[in-house]
Image (cartoon, rainbow, N blue to C red; front, top):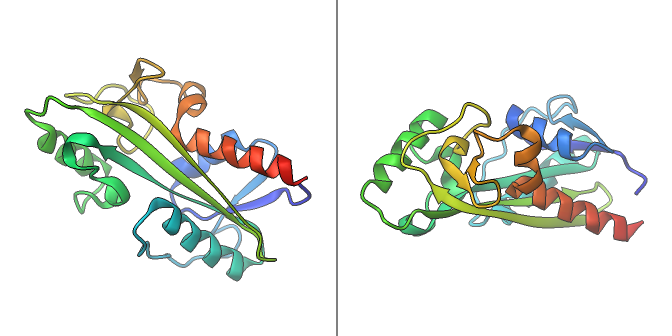
Length: 193
């Protein structure tokens, strides 16, 4: 693959950091660094559709390859909620989202959940690629750990046998939904060379 500069279509510094750590062979710049300051409203019904919406907007405005992710937590006992609304579940910040999730999970025996991440990569010449990653676990009854962001302190990873907030960045990235989606994308891109 010739193009080694990717614009990450996200304003989330935590996501940007993870993307940079996983895509070490690329120069990943933020949308702001590429001169894109708009907020792309997520109006679609799936993670992948929202990821493409953001990547297409950034690629068309910057003239650079744009990588976007849309991801979230789906809880079985809540019918898949918060799902695509994970970041705005409570209408507040991440702490409020976690508080609402714990409240909604009170008394629930089924605590199974998974994180899903859809990655879209769009080039200005019209080429488009995508990958989806999932990781499975359960929702804890209280927050555990100080690392990570979002719901990490409530998500007990089946792979790691600890919450994502208790894991190191390297441990989390090795099994996370975003890590798996990005690895899948890398495999696709290797096949294009």
